[in-house]
Image (cartoon, rainbow, N blue to C red; front, side, top):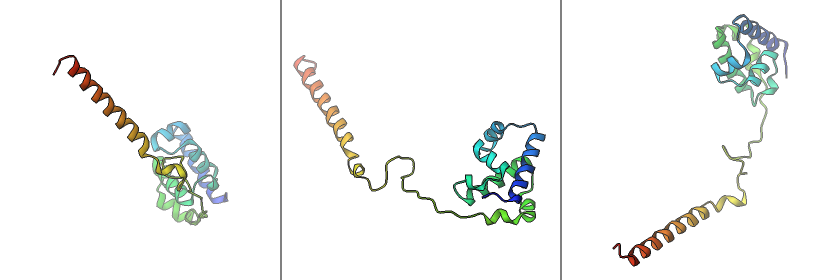
Length: 136
């Protein structure tokens, strides 16, 4: 989705960024908003965001960074709050590539058991070796 109002806000943000002589990478480093999202804001492409909530948060953060009063921008452009809410499928666990409910989820104890067994075996062998050499 791309509305004329969001495109206009994005152009205003781009003009201010260029007036401040900042690159997209410099803005990314200062705000922690990825370059792709900054470009999407400046182009008015809300569909590039995971959800409208992310878009609103990033627009607010970017506006504050550029020195704009977000509340004033919001009063002049209330459609920012009317972004579409799309459902996304989050079937994967957070921070993993393992699908929730997969078969491999219950065998996580096996590597720990193997390492523990190996460590115990080494300790017992070291004890027998020390005892046979007369260290004890």
